[in-house]
Image (cartoon, rainbow, N blue to C red; front, side, top):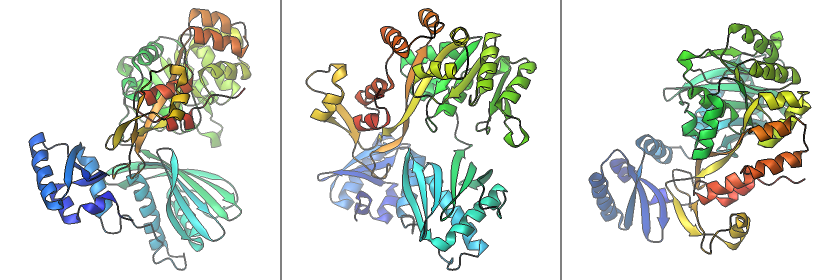
Length: 480
């Protein structure tokens, strides 16, 4: 099927460093290097218009991104599916190693966060999670399944003979001058071993809180929480909602050179200068609670506990927060208010929760509209009904991505956090100490101006950072 990029021959695209982004009627939108000044881009636009014989509009594209897309479009075989060439028997380590490398490198180029290796009766399907969505990366013959997973196990230095028990491991590889850390987990299925890899780009720089995309009032509250001298600050959300990034961004916001800051993580994902990183070693019985208890004898100022999984860890964290340390941790909870009841369920007395808890940040991730193909449009009747709570005027303008070469036709590129920042007021602290009914907590929070995650997501849609459909898909009102 022809694409916009097909309208620009490879030699012309390379000559001008130009990529076809999208087409609107007779008008072709072309990406040109952002490093060129406006006059250079205008000259290139006119020349392209003459050579292509169609109306051309130019959009500046970041140079590194433009080169990446150019290579993806015009490199021989770049758009072809990954094939298991030379693997008719599936028992040659060389071709298998090359195949695994190709899968890893292709996933990194797609900005994938995870790779799923899934055996079936007849074939092996490899899928990559890009911006939260799984897409097929390769379909390989079934006889490749065993050698493929075995190669991953060799890289991760785990037992390749054991195929019945779940195993975990990790390894690193280099691609385009970047080191990518990989966490591997295997599990036996009816059709063979399934493997999942979490990819972490160690070169990708962490931002401080200001770089998370928070609203100004949310940023003020979060900074107040993480710059406090003591107390418990919790991030909440499901797996893959960006909690780890938020936790480390909070540390990045601190003056770590004048504080004793330590983290306890499973595993350590981001290494920051001036911070002590302590791993959890479950196979030796050294869990979060054990490491946290030991860390309290190290004169800490700030402690990051990667995840509060059990009552013992929760209790030690609360006691540490009450004894003059700032403890930042994460919990699996549906929203900010439910964190209070998760702590109750972990056998933390209400008066201790009230005294220790300084604030909660609940979050989700929604896909961000691609900035290279976004357009404004009038909201549909259905969208207006979804936004009815905001009491908008007659004309509601929203934004969406039409799909282009940069976002590979999806209309989205990267993800944006949806944040619910819950700062514990004195009145709320008094209420929590009485182990209140959830409805009473929700009523007081609403009175203090607290918004639901659903409302925060729709605000992002109204601001043009995501779509109403994306907000509705990831953040829906709980059914009671």
